[in-house]
Length: 85
View 1 (cartoon, rainbow, N blue to C red):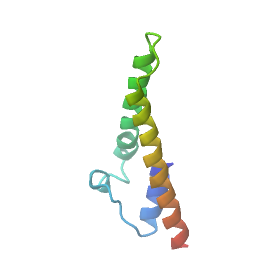
View 2 (view 1 turned 135 degrees about the vertical axis):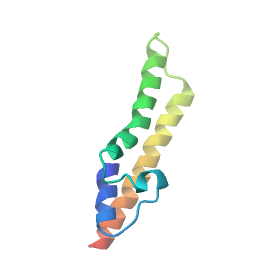
View 3 (view 1 turned 90 degrees about the horizontal axis):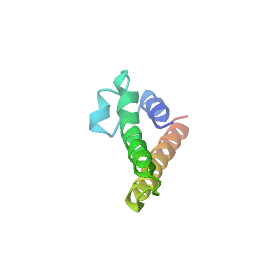
């Protein structure tokens, strides 16, 4: 959802704030760059619970923080899309 709303906002005239993604937004690398940190976090969580232990609190905090950041980004993008109309 983040990538889709970001592309829509940029198409409406805004600019990408992430300097790493700015030049790659409309390339096949963009979804990979967006998904890689989430996949890495998921692997860490799965590996930490593999031995029957619950995921460490640090991973759960990182997961909640990641979700919160993505929610803020998507919300900001949706606000910009609505303003552009």
